[in-house]
Image (cartoon, rainbow, N blue to C red):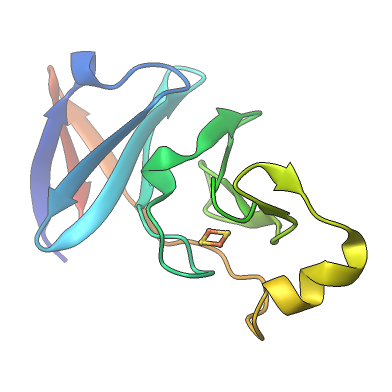
Length: 121
Ligand code: FES
């Protein structure tokens, strides 16, 4: 595991998402309750970037099909249920999942030193 500087603390705002690329991996940085978190910027459903998603109640919701992930733990809190923000009926969710079951996203340990934010990757 390697520790890499990824941003400054002032670049990461409470409840907002900052996408960075580190060692060929797409990473999403955010601040929740004044603590910085790093998760992979890739939805496990179809691999779309979570940076385009919406943050609410510590979770990011993927804009394409509605899967949500806790930004503090990476845990999946809701699997697919919509298409670009339009809710779909329950009966269609199985087809929408295209055979993929709910999965969590990867998290990265974050350290700060002064204004510098680093992650272990
Ligand atoms: S690509 Fe994210 S929910 Fe489908």
